[in-house]
Length: 138
Ligand code: CMP
Image 1 (cartoon, rainbow, N blue to C red):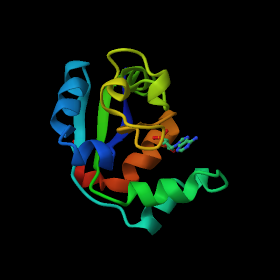
Image 2: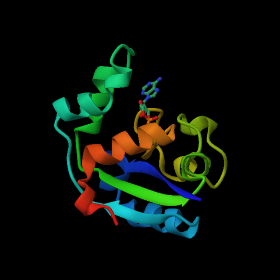
Image 3: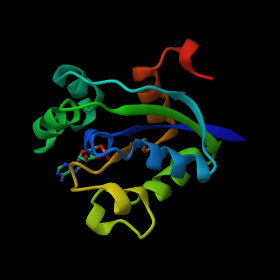
Image 4: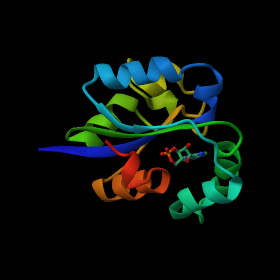
């Protein structure tokens, strides 16, 4: 059975011109793009997206960073999507990311780490619906 995950290419990677290379890796790994756009978050909307982290010391910096430039959110479909996508992107801290992962190749720091990947099927659905209407998901 196929299922879905949510991702967004973060401002560092978009501004560096790495969106195309990252999408190419995602498709080559067998993910189907269900929805995709380029957009920009306000600090308030970034705060809403990352509300689960609001007690963390890095929350304010994270919201400022994630609203500092354009992002490319996507909904992806594949068997075992959430777990396989987290393998493809690598560890949150690029210093710990495996060779060949998207974060090893493109991330700059634990904050500017190139790409997001949902951590559960439930969050994948919530996060995908945060950015895309049902009429934008194919
Ligand atoms: P992500 O897992 O996509 O969503 C939460 C983000 O918070 C994470 O990526 C990083 O960008 C950021 N983050 C997580 N841990 C830290 C940290 N210790 N310091 C700064 N930013 C962090």
